[in-house]
Image 1 (tube, rainbow, N blue to C red):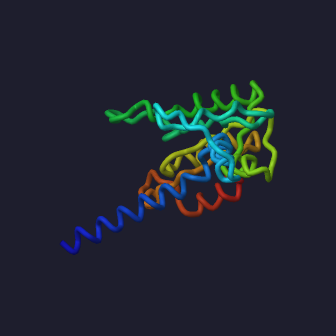
Image 2 (cartoon, rainbow, N blue to C red):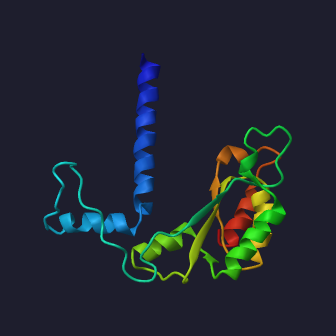
Image 3 (tube, rainbow, N blue to C red):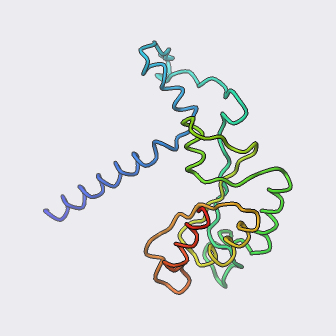
Length: 182
């Protein structure tokens, strides 16, 4: 019984931490929607549905959501991979980055997006966030050189246990990603 209570307490803590970590990234429109109530103004609520009206359309060139492209493994899929669509061949990834650049996009970090939404920093005209999940070694061997050639950062969503396996990004490589602006 004691173990069950400890497990439930840990799960509750993790859920609360996840919500708190998510809140800053909800986007500018959500913050604007909540702002009138915070300033003491009335917010109309559709009684039949019990929800506030949709937020006003974005104003200004960057007052809108920023696209996020999520990558998992930059490599050809391994034989019998359970989810082969999670793999992107290195040449395809390079082509996607070339396409983004040719169409005026500029990669930025989630921190820059957050700083923009809070009025601390401007963004390029067409920002995009490129994220890489789990910490596969291809983040360092393929994604870093491809993005570095354009002076673009990436965002590494590192699963710490992936620092050990042979296919994972090594701690020194993670430090180099950080030094490159990731």
